[in-house]
Image (tube, rainbow, N blue to C red; front, side, top):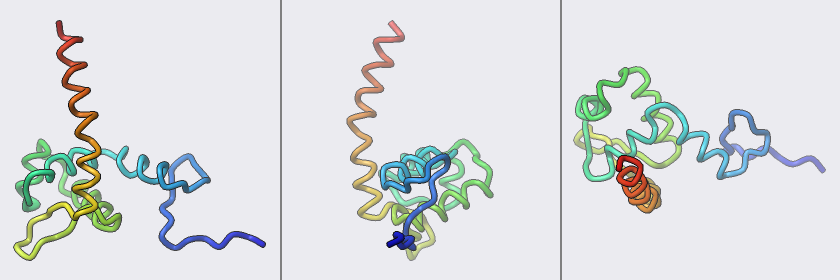
Length: 112
């Protein structure tokens, strides 16, 4: 019996497996995605404030990434018009913190 395609399965560049980790890494590996998540980790930001925080990223690319992050359940548009992390998005950012601390240690040692 052939497997039914899951409607929530995200296509993954260069992979036919569609495994969740591959789909997540595919999403996170797109230009500006990690930066958007990082900038939203502490505060809700409007599109303009987010664009400024992201070093004036192209509005078209920024909106495309925000749409993808909203569809993935990591970002939501608040009532005041600003973008913020969902509980799932906050959980994802928390998983980055050990890597962030490691990167800071690595950077300080490699700069010495």
